[in-house]
Length: 324
Image 1 (cartoon, one colour):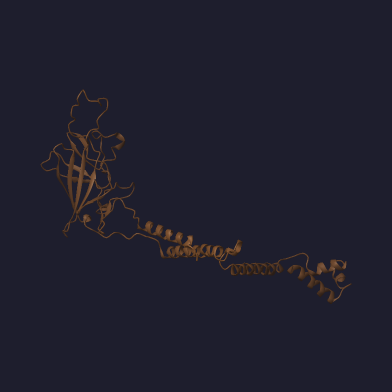
Image 2 (cartoon, helix red, strand yellow; image 1 turned 90 degrees about the horizontal axis):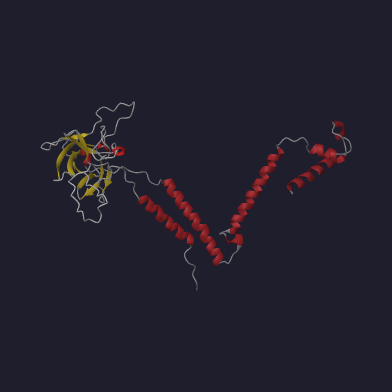
């Protein structure tokens, strides 16, 4: 005995359900935020300084300038921003194209020259329990080694090393602390990589904000569509392969749907005929009956040549013609 295989509509419904589930599981990562696999969520957007909008005054207590860091025993101080370019105007940084002058997130000034420590980056990284942010592609750094004249690639220019900065964030659990504390830790001997630490309450683990997903109405709509597809396609599969039906009779419960179609058709005819009786017309039953008897359109002509039975007979005839 041959058993019919699983209807394709059911397989389609399962695939659609899996697609909806996988789409719901995909999360859009907001800039300057990160979530760990264990559920920890970090949001540093409050530490990002944005330039004030034109014609709008900043709110009271809102920070409008960059984060300034003292170098202490280092010969210069630093200026940086978090996940955004610095707000201060920078004039001709060393080794940076003019079109990228406004795209610097950290820098320092030394002997009237500005050195970039990297371009903006909004991708936070979790390394164990450490939250870090790295800026790269700053000003050139290090000493270029002389190339051998016998080198095969003498004509090619070697890309210079560029300055970068690494910022690590730590949770500030001090209840009396009001502002983040930014500290310069050090740099490598070539002064190409700079390390900073920031102690802030914004670097503490927080709760990820709830994101609007698929609502209850959409869920029921998807379930309804899948159920309808399974009903029709599964019914067609059964009627065609088991009942050996052809044409419109392949539809499940064909007699019921056909009866509903005829019922709707009758309702439409009744409604249109009822509305037609109330429509104004220049010629009614009286005019038609007068024309049939060959009389004029006056009141006197209507009373000559016919009686009530003739009028009733003519009305019945017209009703039958209308119903046909």
